[in-house]
Length: 451
Image (tube, rainbow, N blue to C red; front, top):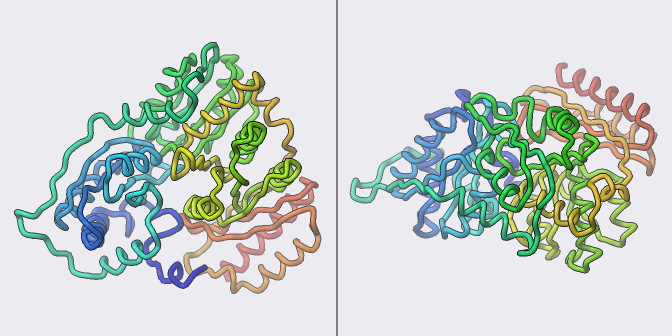
C-alpha cells in the first residue's frame, strides 16, 4: 500500500461506497462531493461532466445533489440516466467531457450505493486527483456567482450511442444468426441495452432481469447470483446464457448444460482465440484471485501472465505498462483494452461469442483446455479498526497453511475495499483439505478481530 493510499479517508479501491443514509453515502456529503469535484476539475481546465447511474432507487437522490454541487462550483453537467459503468467511461471519452461520474454500488444490494469517477480518457481518476478532491472536501462549501453557475442537460440518445459502439467492437461480418441465448441484466443498468446488442446482431434473445423497480437490482439474479440463469438455460434449452451485474461491468456465462464460466474461463477463451489468430498482442493481466489453473493453461501456450491486486484500477495500468490488451478478474471484470478502458460485460461476452462462432464450438468445448484448481472463498465480517497485517496469530497461521500447501496451492487474505470484510481465499488440488484450511483461517480471523 502506498503512502497516498494510506492517507485516503473516502476513496476505496473503486470510488466511494457504502449504505445509503449512512455517512458518507448521504445527500449532504454527496452534495459537497459534487462541489469538491467541480472545484478540483476547474483547476485543470473547463468542460462538462457526465453523470450516469444504475437502477437503484437512491440514484435519483444522488443524481440531483451531484448536479447541484457541480453547478455550485460552476461546472456544467450532462445527465445520462441509467447506463452501464463502461458506457459512461466510453461516453466520457467520445463526448469530450472532462470527467464522468457513475452512481452505482455495482454488484451490491439496492440499499448500498456509491460514486466512482472516470477522467477525460475514460480511465479511473489518477490518485493525485482523488487526493485533491479529499483535500477540497475539508474546505467550506461556497457557490460561484449566479452568472457562473453550471447548467444541466439530459443526453437522450446515450443508450443508442452505446449499443452501436458495442456492435462495432466485433467484425462487420460477425453475426449471431441461429443462436438462442438468455441475457440476464440483474435488473440493473444494462436492462435496456444488453438484450438489444445481441438481438441486433442476430440472436434470438430471452430477457431476464430487465424489470428494475429500484429495489430488485442484483436480487437473486445477474452475475453474482447465476442460479436463476442456470435453471433457465436448462428449461429453455438454449445455446448459452449471459449474466451481467447491476452496473454492467461484470459478466459470467453459462453453457448449454448449465455450467457457469467465470472470468478466468472467459479470458482463457478470448486469449486462446486471439493467440491462435496471432493478434493477442503480448500477455494477460490477472489478479491475486486468478486461478492457478488459468495461469498454468496460459503458460502451456507460452502466453505471459502477470498478477496485480484486485480491482480494474490496477489491471488497466499494468496493461498500459506492457502494452497488452487483455486482463481481468475471476468475478467477470474483463478489460479488452483495444475497445474499452475499463471492465465491460457486454464487450467481453461479444469477444467470447466471436471465438465460439469462428470455431463452431460450444462454450463447453472452448473452455476444455483449462483445468481449474478448487478454490474456497470465505468472507469474515470485522470491525473497521481491525488491522489484518498486525494480527500476529493470523499471520502465523497463514504461514503454516502456506507451508502445508507448498507449491500446489495458494493462500490470500485481504481486506475488502468496499465492505468491512476480510476476504479469505485458499486454493489447491485437494478440495476437502483446502476447505478445512480456509475455515481454520476464518475462525482465527473472527477470534482475533473480536479480542
